[in-house]
Image (spheres, rainbow, N blue to C red):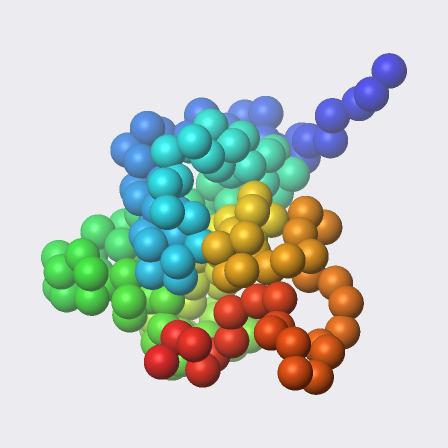
Length: 164
């Protein structure tokens, strides 16, 4: 009989609010569009929900991370507009902080760094695990990219030069 792992605190948490999940799904969708990983995120909606619920069950602090990300994105979109807000979140190097640096930041910067590190970056990794490598032209997929680069042969993934 298999046993499901769960943090004891997670039992007392309320289910993730629909509005927060909708904002996280929009973030997930925007990642696919911006990084050209997944063109249509709709088939992955229930998987994302299960992924998020599992994160919360294992580490209840993720409930707060998703709420923080929701609020942070709402503010960013109001300030910059949707396209520029997501571009800022995905590409701004100033908000890349180590775990120890995050907690010494002012509130707004702390929220941005947590949103990038604990939500956005994890959604990128999750997209790649769901098949996003295929969008990069990976030939050695389903178990991620394998094999060495062979001279005079195309690489099995999209390179930085191709993005230019």
